[in-house]
Image (cartoon, rainbow, N blue to C red; front, side, top):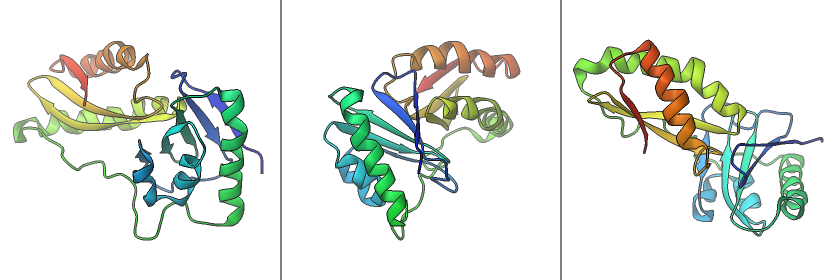
Length: 186
């Protein structure tokens, strides 16, 4: 098994590409070891000293470190990923599911058409680019011209995430929907 790695804009996060499907649908973002009970793969990764976050995407895994240097952590992480896939264990524990994307959404009923367009733009133009950097971004709400988004994986805590939100996503949404004045991370 050959696992490729890619740097992300977040220096504390590295993207691992195992060459196979990781999550058939949805994503899973775990920021602490207690959340890893949902995934045997994440449990293995949190077992590596220095790992502080695991994000499972469609065909990639991003790992965030709290301390240590990548040249020292990377072999242990690669080993944990390889062991997991070679064992045949499932990525998700039985009865577990991907993160829900529509829980806690908020917007006024009269903004439903605007929200539909925002979600379409997120799905077709923004999420694929963000996934390329090892993360994900999901809609949380819309109120008074402000779009609220949740950043996951490599995007969560990334030094360039504010620029991505303010200059990239905000400008794109405003271009298609002039009523969108601001984008905020939740």
